[in-house]
Image 1 (cartoon, rainbow, N blue to C red):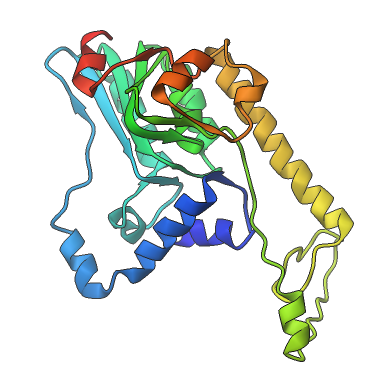
Image 2: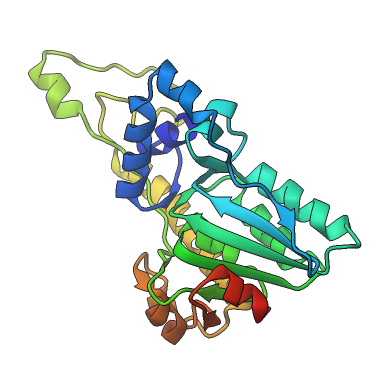
Length: 262
């Protein structure tokens, strides 16, 4: 998975639990060509309009941007496709409300803030619902809706950002390898395999992660004003706990029940 590989190798920040990201990458690598063809018989959930004029947009899988068809086939969802669905429902006079049906552990950073801004300013009543996972990047998007409902046992939150940069310098030294990096710019080439980050490079990357985290928290508080800062330090909550923290606006056992009260 190209977009996850970049994040897992430290090339960009991630809005997803590290274990979830690695699990997804491992599963994707396990699929051979025959298995990939078999996946074609499965159909990814598509946006649809209910009889009551509610446009439903499924947000299912790990989130990325500009994904390849193969990445989508392996269960990822593209913010571009989600944004197109929001635009289509916003322009459709037969659609009175828009609902996001979320089941996602999160994903990469790129495109998430812009999609959340689009949901927040769409001009029609919006709701997000999860009965499984709504975490990290997925929560950033869902928190922009007017209402955010979860099942009592759902997993919600994970308002945090991280980068994972492996340091193989000791292993390279033991193997008799010395990595020489010829570069221009003190932050260029930070984290190249076989090297260690210096204090300046580490501080620069930490600043980047902290900035995204601050923007994430600010975005949540635009609609979820009761959420306190100490509930946005990367931890997850059950649906019940999330309701008590103000991360969600209500509980519903199923999507149909959430829609009925929308």
